[in-house]
Image (tube, rainbow, N blue to C red; front, side):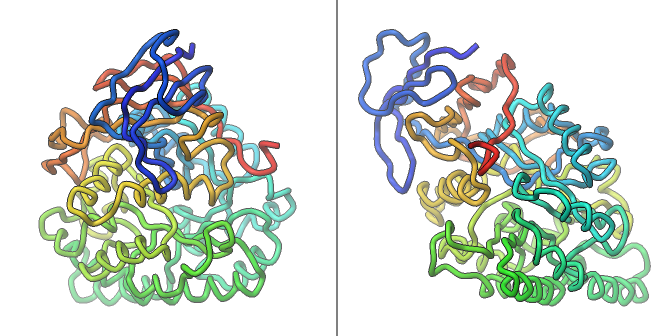
Length: 450
């Protein structure tokens, strides 16, 4: 199924350097990097003027499969991901039923094996009801456990709102613990105050006042203190405030950090200025906040206090979004356009290509201890993305691949375009055409790969 492919004359962005060269792909792996002869390749791709990146690893998505497939599924969203240069993802546990057992976890792996065009892994869900079961497992065999999204199922599922549950989990869990960091008690008090004043039909602009800086900061500060006490591996998902960035270190390399965090693309792209224009379409939890927060997050990303870039890709139908405030579902689709957004920042001089690759490719592989992914190295899986940095286009209904059929970025012009995406050496996306000759693979990591 794998062809021998030679990519010629690409600007290879990898490990802090940009070098013009060639890459040979054979048997799903990167066979050789350098100045290579064209003979014996099944296909030669002239990449002159284009940049070659490692495949993007999106370590936080909600692909809705199983149980919520009217919004999205593993096939549609992985297809959109590959078109956007994303070759691997980690999916969250708030599918239906919630992924709270090893049996449910295996069901998702089995589904992905026959549906996902990208490589995949899945968090095991953890909440107040299944902590004992999770701690009875060998959690070192899990890529991570998470409570993210489980608060939609019932109140009281956020670990950040329960110091007792965090104490128990952080003292005993041997995997990464990735949490949604907001204090429900603060959010609920704010909801009640705004409901009394404005009724059910709140303007979207109040969302960051309800899901406030204080609610995020106090939750993150407390979670970090408990994690440090137990030397736990804590990862704070989708950071949203400049204030929280000061709680994280940048004086040691990622490999040595026990406490890590990420920023989702929409929190770098949008600010509270955009609620007037986009309303509930940009209602996310945690909320998009101020312009100062947006700039502070980007600054902290560049300073290495923030370790990764993710999307928190969370599709809903437009009918589910375009409701009154308390009924509108939180979340929106982003995985097809995350690389384009970050490349737009590059074009504006706000981030280098090398730093972008570090945060979207290298660091997710380091953080989750992925085997032979995240880099352009000989012997590694050929997860690769070719990008034309001077190919303008505009997001529109007819080029959106999400099953939900919409994007908060509709009408946004981009200057860059993904032309080719390779997953395990298979050219899946080729200048607008999909070659669905192979599915992605489960992501091997840590002890599971040895």
